[in-house]
Length: 507
Image (tube, rainbow, N blue to C red; front, side, top):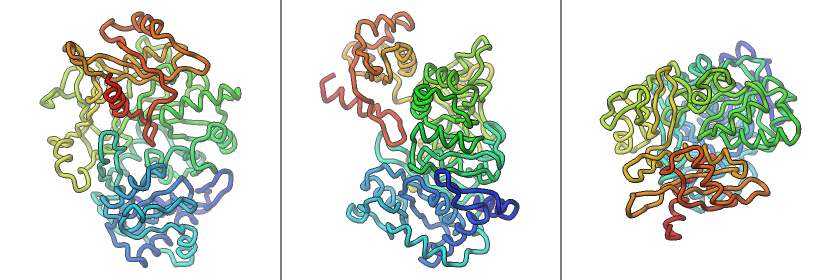
């Protein structure tokens, strides 16, 4: 089934319902959203785009993005969303690897793709292209697609090398959306989704269930994340949903506290995409109340491995509430989750191993990369590369990526545990812990610290603080103060850069 059918059906049932907003201004109702997508499909077909062709979106957030995304699906083509913050050379590599026949670029963005060797047609004058498309008759119906056909070619963030193209099918999007409604949160036509995170990533995946249920779609006029703007939009529209990376939650909390706001109009904030530290989510709940939910997923299994409910996030009465709050929740209904040993066999509750996932939400493989697919999919199980454990109640706790585990003197040290402790110190705003080669012990622990505003943490005080909370062998042996941590365009800390800095400076 073509996922665009859900837009067509909503247009038939609730065509006059508001659909797309740019800031406070309505751009299209559902009938208009559907018609525009059909016109884009007509234009794509006129330009020679065939069913199964890849069409890239190297664009900033805008309501046009959603129209183009559904227009691509209407035509039976495959969307290749690319983060607008990527360097043109990075974007060009993705379009070339995907074999994109056409790339849409936001109006106003500097068109450098051609100069850096991008292949395929580049549509840089987007306004002109849309004006031409909107004079065409829309296609009658979305192209016929099998459930196993590609819908979205999602390129991983590439923190350890070239990104890989994750093949996301129409079935995977359907399963993800239905699992969200069953396991994460309700969506109704009265709700609105605010797209402050890149639509090329998790926020864009969540378009699907909000279209299915006929909700409103609000793209901030800024095109990105601004705490004041988000709080104002939520208060204006009400019943607002926000997908946010943990860093965004932290920034929104700080902004709300500075304004004396309690987040009026914010109904739900789903956080994902990186570690949410206990101190940050506790403060967020204290500020906004029980509006937070957590989702754990990967591009290879989009947004649908586990979920931590708003009740679990807000609970302070359960004897193990801190442990549960530090988890990523329980398996979503569409998949199996296992903690595997070195040979992939299931481990008992409490034992630490690699998180494995099996189900219809798991990718068929990486685009034109059989070697990586074979390493990642074993006997139908997705090997996530994340290390964690299951408790007896089914809650999954992530400890770290397997490549980030520090082995010192034969003992495993999980950086996140050390980071959680350091973030309890009032003078620490952000921290990232990595391993440093050490001749006798193999590795030792070092911490890169961003100080709270107006503070200058003392190394001895930080060490004493760690010794109050964790074993001596886990405490950092050195601290490096930074103005900011290096992050990729999705807000994930680049530990590879921190390790490279250590190697360059001789440790």
